[in-house]
Figure 1: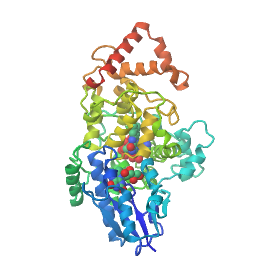
Figure 2: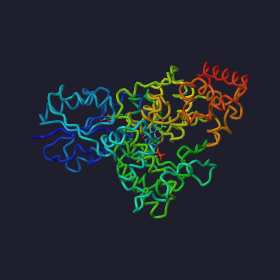
Figure 3: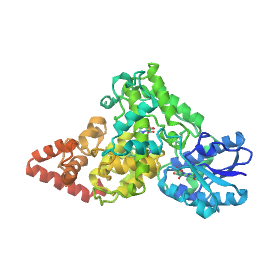
Figure 4: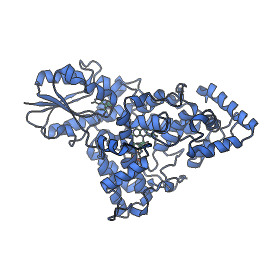
Amino acid sequence: MANLILILGDQLTPDISALDDADKQHDRIVMAEVHDEASYTNHHKKKLVLLFSAMRHFAKQLEEDGWQVHYQRYHPDNEHRSLEAVVAAQAKDLKPERIITTECGEWRLHAQISEWHKELDLPVEIRPDTRFIATKQDFQDWAEGRKQLRMEYFYREMRRKTGLLMDPDGKPEGGEWNYDADNRRKWTGKPAAPATFRVEPDDTTQEVIDLVNEHFTDHFGTTDDFHFAVTAEDANQALAHFIDYALPCFGDFQDAMSDHEDWLFHAILSPYINSGLLDPLAVCEAATQAWYAGRAPINAVEGFVRQILGWREFVRGIYWMNMPGYAEENRLGNTRSLPWFYWTGDTKMRCMHKAIDSTRRNAYAHHIQRLMVTGNFALLAGIKPEEICDWYLGVYADAYDWVELPNVLGMVMHADGGYLGSKPYAASGKYIQRQSDHCANCHYNVNKSTEEDACPFNALYWHFIDRHRDDFAKNPRMGMMYRNWDKQKPEKKEALLNRANKLLDQIEQL
Ligand code: FAD
Ligand code: DLZ
């Protein structure tokens, strides 16, 4: 008897576990562009184009490979507006023995699919997602009994497990596990950043661009200048482009920001890795091969591998071990609403304007912009975690709940009480000045802290430190901040807090 195999929009690989042992002659694959998935958050228009076009290309490839595929294209008048409705209709038609799918990456949808067997009166087999390098069980086994979960120790385990950047004696290549200290150079324009990898839209992508422009007008961002890869073949070209042109400088300038360059030396591979067009282990192996071949230095290759083998796997483990309660956390008790300029980029703070504008145009901002600019501001201003999480989930082409939520709620907002990170990444304008050239072009003065034109990050930083004394004063990694704060004269402290309160009162005008 036949099976119905559901492949989701971020599972675009023939190696997906739902296809293991499948029968091309009898089984039917279902893929569907549906209203409910396209609308549960304010997905950036470019993310919609990327996913729908990549889904269409992948379905075509499956058909060419001899699979039977039922594919629903998006239309606002579609009768079936949810994945469940599409699957139910197909099940009625095919009368399969069971439904097979690979576990999805979001608790929201996972909870729904886990109930389908009742609604559809059919067995629903949910298979593990073997695209991750650690299984959920591996992560739980590692985490069990540990008081604190620290990415660095998990990452070392993953290096040992995979052998990536390990020498034959089981020691880390180059002698160190982590070259983080060599990842912090400011970029002053030299060496020139490489040209971005571009794929011009083909007919399928152009059709989807037209569809998104017609039916998703109120979604964030623009489809203009869409140039993402939408096939595995092109995503592999993007990987090769990164290894050849950007990886050699990735390490040095990993934490740099620029007023003039959106992409710098970053990989721009997360949208492809997360949707299945690239395999994370193969990406790491391609980078390590560049080091063994002498084409990229160790601080670049280790820094890059750490992000995928370490951070990416770590946040996924945290997510599944702690959902659904994790999404509700707000341990710093934040109550402020997200300022409207997160949606428009209309702010005089140059770094914020640049990060949000790049996000609007590209559905992309690199890690330091997300962490130390838009994230840092939300942390200092005490924005409600659920509002800032919704923003991050909507605006990036690589955003899925499993990876966005721990990064935002845990790493940025410290709303989980330090479960994911040992200290908040709070920073004043000095950090942004050190890592970028934004401050030189800003309306505000980064060297001032209490005056009308002073950089808002400065007073907000001290306000954050002051108002969270009970949360952080005993944290050994925060001790110096509290000693510095306590050393300031009372009148200076008062001026800083007054300035911060005024900024918070007028937050929409910043
Ligand atoms: P590079 O800087 O070139 O890094 C290489 C790869 O490492 C990335 O492609 C990605 O797969 C992985 N990676 C790097 N950092 C992380 C991390 N912290 N967590 C998981 N993977 C990582 N990444 C997402 O994929 N989706 C998200 O929704 C997302 N939201 C984020 C929100 C915040 C507030 C922060 C601080 C980080 C977030 N990240 C997210 C992680 C990171 O910013 C992006 O993966 C990265 O910017 C993607 O661009 P890139 O491919 O050029 O990455
Ligand atoms: C993100 C997304 C969007 C925008 N649209 C679809 C869709 O129409 N059909 C689909 O199968 N998946 C879509 N996705 C991805 C899911 O919403 C969800 O985020 C992932 O499958 C979680 O792993």
